[in-house]
Amino acid sequence: MRIEDMTEDEESMEELKSLKISSLDDEDEGLKTDDYINELNEEEDDDEEEEEDDEEEEVLVTLGFAEKPENNWCLQRQVFPSKAGGIPAWLDPENLPSGKSCLCDICGEPLQFLIQVYAPISEKNSSFHRTLFVFMCPSMTCLLRDQHEQWKHGPEIPSRSVKVFRCQLPRSNAFYSSDSPRYDGSDMPLGIGEHGREIKFVAAVKHWREGHKLECRNLSAQLPDANKIDSGACSNEILKVPSKTLWSEYNIIVDDESELSMSDVDEHSNSLITTQERDGIAKSTLETFEGDDDRKSWAAFQERLARAPEQVLRYSRDERAQPLWPTSSGRPSKADIPKCSYCRGAMTFEFQVLPQLLYYFEVKNEVDSLDWATIAVYTCVDSCEGSAAYKEELAWVQLNSQTS
Image (cartoon, rainbow, N blue to C red):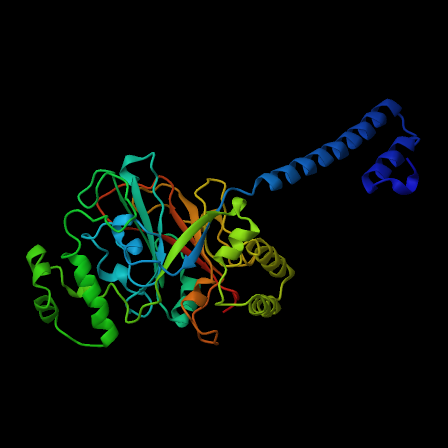
C-alpha cells in the first residue's frame, strides 16, 4: 500500500507502530500502544455496525392515495373504508364522540373531519374491526396555538385543535355481519344505522352548512324514524360533532411502498398539482429554513416522498417504525409522548397524514390558509379495551416553521 492511499486512521496506526518509545518500562508502553490500535479497530467495527443498522431501519410502510370514489357504497361503513373528507363512516354508529371532545379546545368551534384509517388487528379479537378517525379545526390560528399546547406535560392539560379517536369492535358485534364484505354494493349493516344517530349526524351537517339556527326538537321532528330509536340522541352534543363546512370526499387506496413500480406511481398520479408546481413549493419551503439540520431533513423527506409524490398517508404499525419528519426541529422525544390515558400503557407511532391532502381539499395556498408539514398519530400499543367506544389518541403536528 502506498502512503498516499492510506486512510487517516491507518496513517495514525502506522505512526504509532513506528514510534520508538524511550521509557523506564518499554514493555508497559508497548501494551498501551497496542491498546490504542485495538480501540481504533473497534471504532471502525462500530461504525460499520451503525451503517448496517441504518440500512435495516427502513421498515415496511403502506402508502395511502386519495381517489374519487367509483360508487356510493364503497365509502359506507359496512365495507370498512379508509376515506378522507366528507363525513365519517363511523365504525360504531351508536356511541358517537360527544361533548367537548368534538370541539376545538382553542376556539370552541366544531372540529372538521379530516381522514379515517381502517387498521384492524385481526390477531386480537377485540380489535378485529378497528378504525382511527382524525378531526381538526380548519383555523390556522388555532393550529399555530396547538403547536405550543402539544408540548405540555403532567398535570397540564393541552388544548388541542387536532384530535384522534380510536374505535374497535370484535368480529361478532351488533352492527356488522361476521362474514367478510362482498364489495359489490349488496353489503348492509346490522341493527341501527340508517335510522339511528348516523341520520342525525348527517342532518346536523346540513344544519351547519345551511347556517340554520333550528332547535333540536325541530330537527328531530323531521326525523321520526330516528326518534323511535333514541328520543334523546339529537342533543347539542351530537349537533356539534360536524363542522360548518365539509372537505371534498375521497376514497383512500393503499399500496406497499416497497412494491411500488413506476407504473403504479403513474396510476395514482393526477392533474391536481403538476411536477413543476410541486418542485416550486418544495424549493420555496426549503428557503424558509434557517438551520442546516432542517434543510437536510427536508431534503431527505422530499427524496423519500419522490418515490410516490401523490401519497397522502404513510402507515406502519411495525414497532421500529418512525414518522418521516420533514424538519429536525419540532420532533417529540420519547418523554414527550404520553402514556395511554385509558390503560397507562405505552403509545406507539402508527401513521402520518401528509400535506398533499390539502390539494385534494382545494385549500388555497395563502398566508393564513391551513397548512402543516406532517401530522403523526400515536396510539395505544396494546390497542386497549374499555367502556368508551371512541378513545382519544395522540396527534403530533409539525409545521414547516416551528418558530411560528
